[in-house]
Length: 543
Ligand SMILES: Nc1ncnc2c1ncn2[C@@H]1O[C@H](COP(=O)(O)OP(=O)(O)OP(=O)(O)O)[C@@H](O)[C@H]1O
Ligand SMILES: [Mg+2]
Image (cartoon, rainbow, N blue to C red; front, side, top):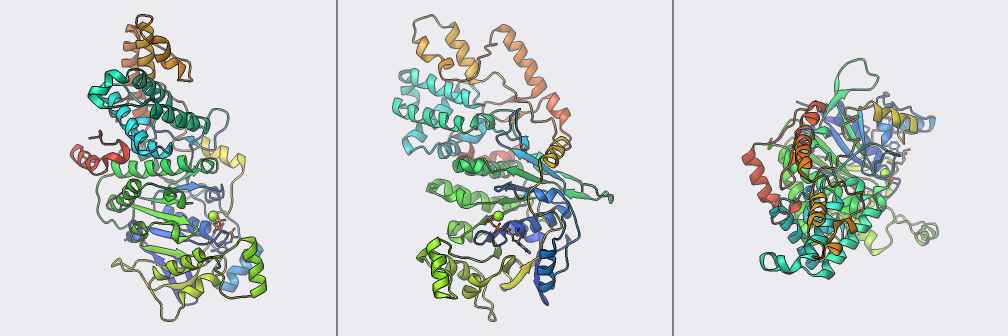
């Protein structure tokens, strides 16, 4: 049995999170500055200690401290003493830093990449904020690429493909349906925007292997040799300025986990715990189909041994259908903080601190979803909680929510706050995946093939406008001649290849670089899963 995690306490009351119940997911909410991130850090640190790998998006850059041993400030010591909580022993966790926007000049971590094909039309449509018609066109373009064996790996592939379909719409009309120039134009503009936001760095290869998220390593500086779960920290500060990119990216990752992990049922501890900070971004303006998909993935990923914890300011941010699946609850204080409200607080010196109707609703909602405690008025308590104090209800060994307790969250043994540049550099250089993802690979794919076609086509046949070179932004290395095929074949052997659906076949170089044993379900299992989840990744065309 994995050891219960002591998360919070007050006098004789102790709240334990049972690792076996971590795959019943969780929710951490509270107004800004009330202690959500610290609670997340305490949880993550404890999972790591138990050998459970963790993924978290670091929205404010303040989670990286988990990689360094902490020290207790005199102020913190005084608070802890008053709360009857022992100061935590200094402890650091092994970590891998990731960065969607990593490039040669600046990187907050190792590059994270996905292929366009793997992201699929549904998530891309969401990323580009397409309407239904435009999404339909995107689906078509994927299908045509599929049927013609054209790989969609990076953005220039997709842009070239769109251009190609637009230029030959008459030819595709009978087989696939109408492709309106206006829709293609809208998609192209969206892609240009994503490009401008740095999305070109994210799309391509080598694609992230989700097995690299599931590592264990010795604690830094530790002599015990005990293996801890590696904490994967995604630099999300820049990512947050493009909320749609952030949301789709995290969803893609969750669905990757879902697709690649085998069914395991209930374990005594999870295989991975996934923290979604600023979770409201996932749901803001998300269309109904996508919400249904998220709900489904969150539900199904549980039996793969993955626990998902949403962190957000307001419980109203989370749709009911998903809220109902989050068994472990930590509710920090809710407050209303517009400048006007602050004035009102002073004037009224009121105990009720929720002012707008939405705030009042949030308090009610939070209170009503937690299991009642006869000795506690939850609704009132929520607005009174101090920083680091919370209302906590965790699942017991039978999966029932425990009675809500008003308790103090135990701070982590690692540093609270960010690391400095030198510490970051050292972490990147010394990580388990150092060198694996740094170099972008640009294999022959749709862009190169279409460029070659245009180049070899007789002049005049719409060649000038159809040239993908006019839409792509990278120098076209059109090595698609006879020599190109041989080279391409060699490249495939070395670096792996991608099937028509973008499924990746590992190459020798890659296999050698990778020490991790991949845990991929049986072929049969994968096919069934694709059936359930198909359209979150690959759209209708995905088998
Ligand atoms: N459990 C705790 N025990 C003692 N002090 C705490 C605790 N939790 C938080 N604090 C203190 O409060 C500060 C703010 O906490 P934290 O960063 O977790 O807030 P937050 O809810 O994540 O805020 P934001 O919404 O702005 O991200 C911490 O830097 C720490 O000093
Ligand atoms: Mg925070």
